[in-house]
Amino acid sequence: MSMAGFLFTLRLGLLDLFGYRRLALIMALSIAIASAMTAFLETYRAGLAAEFNEQTHNLLVVHDSQNAGDIAGSRISSQVAQQLSRMGISMIIPEIRALTGTSIQNATLLRGIDLEQYTRLETFSMVSGRRLQPGDPARMAMVGMLLAERQHLKIGDVISLRGRNFNVVGIFQNGTYMDNQAWISLSDAQTLLGWGQDVSVFIIPDEGILHDGENLPGGLSVTLKGEDLRLIAAQYQPMLNMWHIVSLTLGIAASLALANVLWRLAWLRRREMAILRTCGFSTQSLVGYLFVQAGGITLLGLLLGGMFTLAFTISVRLTVSSFTIVPRVEPGILLPGLGWFGLIILAGTLLPAWRLSHLNLAKLLHSE
Image (cartoon, rainbow, N blue to C red; front, top):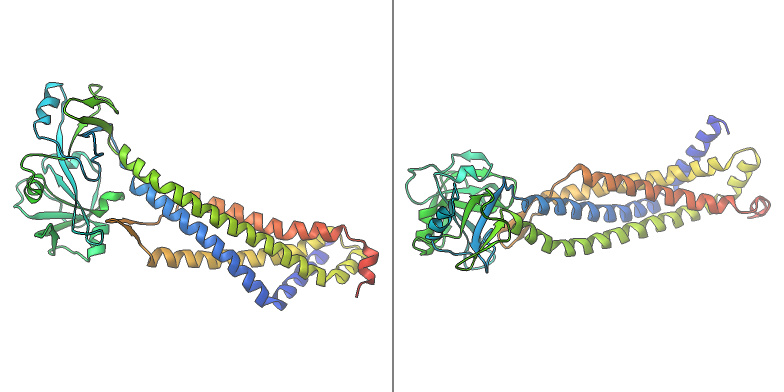
């Protein structure tokens, strides 16, 4: 078949696609819904993984055995620092991690930090204002970017923690769950919670003295810094996997529906296709005729799906118990989408083409 003949079949496919534009739009919308749901879930899956992926830098956390301590719950005596020091631990950094508020709606993640040493533990950048420094007066706070957005805070505002106001001197960004936290000095946190000298955790370097999973006297445990956060993220994976299966089912249903619609459109043109084949047009002409229709509908569906996903990710912020999860678009999300794009086109092209190519030409030419 010449190039002119192939272009003719492509033109014929475009004309038929435009002639049935309402039907094509409905099919594109079904693909858009399935692709948008898949992309939406995958961007939030990536955001969840990034939010609970704390950089460890070979650090260990000593905490109450009954509570993980990465978020809240752990409370241990300050005298544990002396016990760790006697073991030969070179760096011992105390912190308080708690959840304040009277309900889920106004819950705030609180972190009491050692102003002398906290910059050794986390990497962050200041969005505005300055970081907390040794010698700062009481009632000063740094807040994460997501917390600041949720409570509409800016530098100079006050944030209420357990009924007490703290002046916001800085807004920081870390790229993890810490962007939902309010950081205050360790002494302020102890006073606010009424803990005396108690703390939530001690963060120590992994020097081979203590190991991940080890238990200490007094009901203490040692875990790798950030490990409990990954376990928290894993709890949400079954639900995300279930919705991922639902979105894939919708995608398969859309591809099969598209194949059926294109088969019906090709069936309406069966006599013309038979005449072209008797004039020397090969089966490739039929494939090209169907390909341009499947590609046009699928491309429109993916473009609409991309617009839906963009609108959802901009307007919808998933906030669960003081955590705001930010969706993330990563290259790994696009590759399955391209594979799905190819699968829908192949299903909509090859199945109807194979079926029509095996029909008797004589019967097709005599059909009315």
